[in-house]
Each structure stands twice: as C-alpha cells, then as structure tokens.
Image (tube, rainbow, N blue to C red; front, side, top):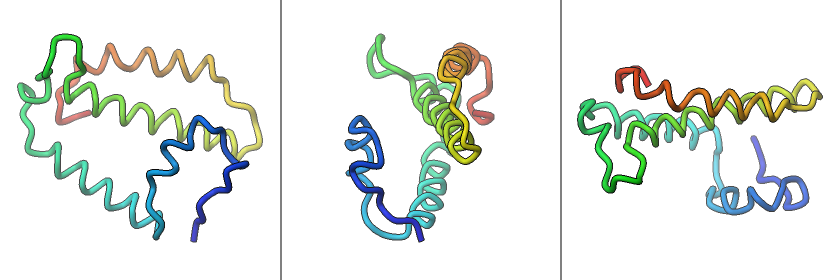
Amino acid sequence: MLQRPEKEEYSSYFATYIDKVPDGNYFSMLHQQTEDVTALFAPMTEERALTRYAPDKWSLKEVLGHMTDTERVMGYRLLCFARGTQPNYLGSIKMYSSLMPHLMSYPFKNC
C-alpha cells in the first residue's frame, strides 16, 4: 500500500494538491476517478464539449485535454524517476505545448 509522502519528500509547490488527497487506498481512488471522469464526459456531445462559459475561458474539451496531457507529462517524470535519470523538462514543455493546439482537431470522443 502506498503511503502519503512526508513534506520533505516533495516540493512545496505540490503541497496544495497532495493535501487534497484523502487518506485511504490510493489505487482504488485512482480507479474510481477514472470511472467518474469517464461517466461525466461520456454522454457529452462535441458541441457541448466546445462550450465556454466566457470567451477567455477553456472549453470542457480543453479541460479534458489538459488533464490527459498533464497525466502524460507526470507519467514521463515518473518514468525518469524510476530509471534514475533526469527529465528533459524543455522537451516535456515542448511536447505539452505542441499537444493542445492539435486537440481541437480531434473528435471529442477520441480525446
């Protein structure tokens, strides 16, 4: 079972996020989150996914794209950690910034 990291094991930048995670079985929580997000977005139409509540705000499609892109970048960082190598942050930033513009060309159901 995974345990909550100690404060000195991560950057203070991530404390805001880590503090929001409740105690419990983290694998079960991740599995449940996958089911919850899938259930939330599954019935959504392309038109609804492109809706913005204000002109300068992200659409739901962009929010979901940001979530999945962030998972990819964090997965890359975890891979580097597991291998004992340093992540190429410039490469991951370029990768991330290149993904978002292309997202709008994909059908929402493929995101």
